[in-house]
Length: 239
Image (cartoon, rainbow, N blue to C red):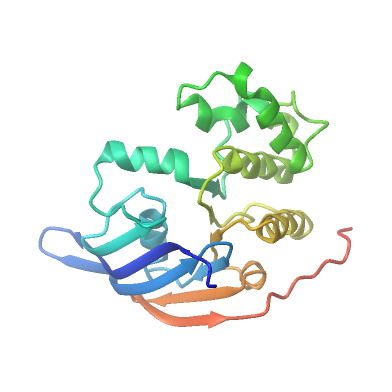
């Protein structure tokens, strides 16, 4: 039996009205992303990649078509409903980590739960378990300035998992890392995928896309290529 679809786009379009000019950023995209899959989205500047990322993350709405997330059409939802979706169904991993300097590792992992009104005392064990899962068991009381870039991104990965989201959406997750640390983070993402997590990674890096099962390439707001592939994973030890 086929896996259920986490994402379904139906003739999805996005037009930016700049007054005298209208810019079509996305032009009728149609595709599905299955539960438990690992998908990379690529494209040059101006291809619509960032616009698609914002729509998938419920940070923006399409101007036409439908976006189904877990079977629910979120395209027409209110700002309040979209905020709830972002907080409960999507785990975000950003290039810049977006950690709060005044908080330690566990407190940063807890943030999405904090915004839902959940006290850290009730969630501490869960948050600490996720931090340990990504290799930060000996850094639980450290603040971001006491961590390396790779460790900060591990905090961001743990934070993205804290709500048990439908999918993880990563925006250039290794863009600020050196090649050795990049491999460590990609290995973490691989492990999450092997556990059955649904991953969507927006990247310009062929090495990052090479880890995915599928690569969707955009050009001028259209799907230029949609390729299924066998992931190429280098698991040689990092030096």
